[in-house]
Image (cartoon, rainbow, N blue to C red; front, top):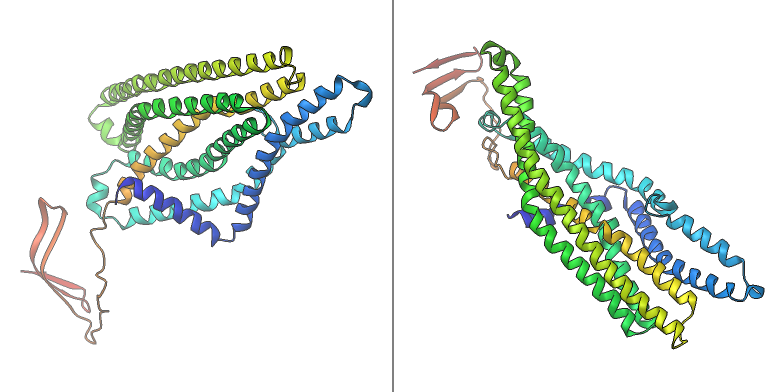
Length: 382
């Protein structure tokens, strides 16, 4: 089974497990809060427009609009504060996240214990621990980011395009649609290109962790042979190699952020100029419409600034899952056959012939004919 199929299968199994673990009510309520947040994102710019338009005629101003807008802003929050809805959702999601992490960690731990001694002798302990830690946490990262960041962002974009097409005109809808599609296309394409650096950085980070763990575990051996300086130099070179790849990752992220800001700025100025033209010359829009347009777009563009980072984290999580699947794909060498019969012997004797013991297929530790008497605990070899 390919890595892609395994990823899809794992996510589907996680979703099915949630519906059978008593967590379905929490999942449904979290999705309800997510939908409520999308509705608030549409309502707040409209309320800002109504407030500004009514301020042009203060005698008829409705103060209830201020209280309603403030309450919705409290529910929505801002970039630095998640808002009441996101806080409640995060709180409710904690048991769900713990459940998925626990089930996956136990399953992986069980699989590692079922592998042969040859597999464990050929693996580096530090690398195994690193892959276990990253692989299990990556599943939750993917689920959280896709469900609570990527899907809401795409839903907000679709809603905004439909809203501007219907409330304003086709030009505004095309501006928003073109800007969003171009920004998403650039983000996805560049992030896909950056994945090679992320994968390379992961491999080097795992290697560095393996050097540290194995060197400290074998502290006595290092001391016996006086290899302290050798181990330190090996560790230093590993860090330097990792930092070179890390620089490529961070530099390409800065390049992506610059392109995103440029695209968003061009779309913002194009739409704003047209709004002002329709207010000043054609008299078809009001000042409140300008506030509506800029507020909505700024609100829409804010998650896009982090979309590249979110997409990068998701890609990195997929890379971590690939490393974990490499372990999960290792077949169990010593296992019972499906139709094995239970042992029953009144005399309690066991006879073993052509007994072969080996840690590695190239080297046999024992190859002979052996007879084992279970009752007398005596084994004879021929």
